[in-house]
Image (cartoon, rainbow, N blue to C red; front, side, top):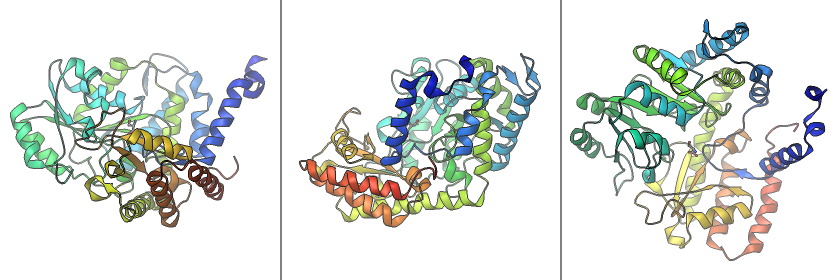
Length: 416
Ligand code: DSN
């Protein structure tokens, strides 16, 4: 019977590729700040047969029968998220972080309205209105940047621009901003110009849940997030908002921009929200920051210039200009040694986004493996050696062996 075959019996080709990816994840160091390893419990829920069910609508108001346990799982996820974040209202159906942002535009804006967001090359995100995206097509996008000297937000300048352009929506949130963000000044600026305030907390949501980052909930009209990054859950989106916006947000998710919810993912989100309330999760988030600071300090000692001079959160942006090596080449060389990073623009980067002058590094995944400051210091030295000696292929080969050994000492799952 087709349904009862194992993956290996049914499709050895896919099974083989999955096995290779498991090995790659096991044997390499993931330093991409938006990546993490979901727990076995999360993976189990995500792989459950909830994937078989259609359930358009919301708990108690579905367009399909057979939704008794679907309602129960969605309500559980919502209640857990509300409690975890002290949020007035939660939508767990949204498929991703980008879609969560699109939902907010659909819910709160009219075509042509102005969105005020962080420049992508200063750490912003594509979905905040980069050319070629949905919001760029339907809204007027005005960007703010970071200060050239401090590489941090300059609130006087942001206020000046907000007053000049009178946006309908202000977005604060970033993919590559290594400092803590206080949300009170943003609320003040939004109120001064009569704008809604959207906090895109995709990267920092785990730190927020554990109390290691200022909380946006009291200040934002809407907070969007993803569940797979620092929150360490399944790949998915999350929207937290004030009760006043609940109806508009729900309608903008379904039927506005999505059809049937991914109930298997909602089940895995419920598991991840439970995990995030456990004391171990708080320790984990704290260690992410300690590890990030340890890696940053090592790189500074090794002569690297870090954007903003360091980090307060889970990520680091290293400027490679002094080495005369691009972000593109650096990420390639590091991968040859089993160290997985991504090229990233630095503020005022002379290089295009496909090349860049920087790399972005983050510690959520390695911290999940149980690595602490001593390991991050060693990894920082390996990164430095590789990037200072780009011509030494043998060096990368020998570091790759050391990386493999380190990974064996810190397995992702004990029994994989
Ligand atoms: N692509 C994610 C990141 O790497 O930051 C954001 O969505």
